[in-house]
Image (tube, rainbow, N blue to C red; front, side):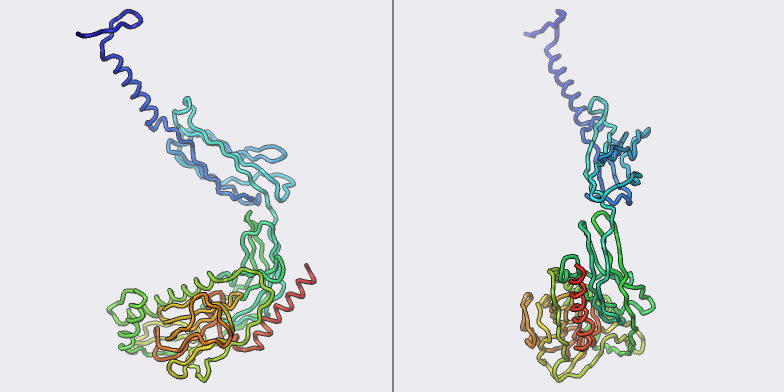
Length: 465
């Protein structure tokens, strides 16, 4: 028997009416909740400023929304009042807005003043009683409009291409973000805290790849968290390096065996063409190996404050002859055709097969690994960014993390890597850059260019706290 119901006016209502109404309500609610026109996500604000602002750089703000933006307002507030930096109602809504707002022109802004930046943005959604979704974010920013203090306390007077020098500097700023020594606009050297707060020391290097005529100077540079930057020039007399050019004939047998083995040991693809194989080993793999040396060296620089640094002169492998010098420019020929060239960046010492390698200065073992053209390689960290590299070794008697001492036997010479015969490749590293070892084998050079500079610097610092 069919049952009917009456509505408030006494009119009969069929049995399917109420479910239909409920279905309609559900569909309406579903439309509200799932339709893009009624999305409920507020606009996204990206305020790219840090917690500090120098009142010189533009404020960078990015606004975005899936249902498009209809308006925004950026307000600056300090203790004296507020100022609207930008405000706009968009005739045509857009999805993304990138703003670069100039600082307000105000008088007597003091360092460390606290200000607020209020960012408001509204989208085109029909949610929120047809007014759209609104984001209203407040960001607190400290004003810092003073650049860091930078000055040079003392430094080695000379630096030669391929060589080293010591620099002691003062860098002071409560909000310091970064400080370093820039060399010839090509590379930066990290600073090590020295003697007292706000003072730093660094050994710097003139990478032999930077030509003498390209030298543009060295500067200590400091940047604070607000983006203020300052620099001070380091007075240096510069000297060129007499490059020795060597023509080397590479045999097919060497490429077919040594180059192939080195590439395979480093899991590199081995080209079939002999010239291409040698170039890949000598140029591409060499670059990767050098980058690895620098990466390991920089990673292991300690930033603890130092009071002293007195290395002894490094000594030649006992009873050896120098087979190759630092800074030789090698030109490689195959069947009388030049196929490549490269720097030799250390000293090659040869004596007898599997000769003992002992060290001249103590330090920490930071690398012990097969390293392509260098073969089985050891790197020792001696402090202040100075390291030594021992390549082509066979037996190794140390492990990574070991603390080693002067005259300790660490390995024996060998033929691992891209070599023609048993020898030791000895390298001096300054923050991972191979420099001229001859300087560091001269005790008088170390005394006048390193230790005396540090001693004199401490006296200057103590007189001018």
